[in-house]
Length: 384
Image (cartoon, rainbow, N blue to C red):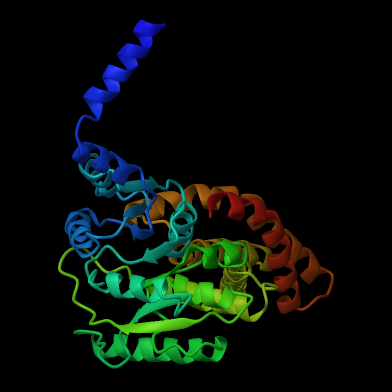
C-alpha cells in the first residue's frame, strides 16, 4: 500500500512539477463564460478563419465555440472536428435528417452551460470584433440581449442590391407590428444574450426559419431588455447566400404562429399552403378538361387529381428543408405519385358518382378532391 501511495505521489509530481502546466490544466478545466453558437451549411472554407478571429478577439475570455452543422455535403463537420483536435474549445454538433438555422441555434444554445451565449453566421459577414463589446454590455447587466444592427447609426448593409434592401425594409415593417420591443434590425442574426433567456423561452419558440432573434423576443413571456450595437455588414467572399423564397415563407409562418398565440403553428401554415395549392390546381385543371375535351367527368377528375399531386409535391419542395438536384426531384416525384394512386382514383370515382346523382360539376369536383386528399394524407406525410 505504501509503495502504491508513493507511486501515485511521484506520478503527480511528474505531471505537475511546474506552475505553468498546472495553470494550463486549470484553464482548460474552467467552464466557458460564453459559448459562440455557429450554425453552418456548406461553410468549410470559412470556419477556420472565423475561429482564428474569435480566438484573437476573446483572448482574455473563457470561451467555447459550438458549430451546429446540418450535414453539409462539403465536409464542414469534418473540418470542424479537425479544428477541435487543434483546440478543444471548438466542438461540433452534426445534425442528420433535419435542417434549419433557427432550430440549429436552439440546439446549440441548449447544449451550452456557459453564462452567456452568442449566435453568429459562419460566412464572415458578422464582425467577430463586436463579441467583446456585446459581452461587456451583458456583464454589466445592462441588457438581456445585445444584437448587431445594420440599420442603426454606424451600421450598414454593405453592397446589397435594391430589391434586397426593399425586401428587408418590408420585413422590418412587418416585424415592428408584431413585437413591442423597438428594434432597428429585427432580422439580425448576430446577437448575444444570457443563456437563461433561452432556458425560459425554449418551449415557446417556433424554431422555424432563419430569424431566431425575433423568434426569441416574440416567445418571451416578459419584456426583454434589448440593446443594439452597430454592424457594418460585409460582403460574402466564399460560399453562397442562404437567402431564398423558403426563408421568406418561414419568416411569415413564424410570425403567424406567434401572432396567433400558438393556435396556428408554422406547420399548420405549411399544410394549409399545400392544401390550397392542391385544391386550386385540381379545380382549375378539372374546369379546363371538362370544358375543352371530350373526356368523361370521371376521367377529367382523375387527371386533375394527378395534376394536384404534382402541385403539392412542387410546393412542398419549395417549402421543405431538403435540397435536391433536378434529376432527384423527378425521381422523388415518381414514388410519391404512386403512393397517391388510391387518392387519385377515389377523386375520379367520387366526382363521377356525384355528377351522376345530379350535383353540379364544381361541387362534385370539390367533394371528390377532398375525398382523394383524405386518402393521400398518409402518402403526403410519409413522402413530404
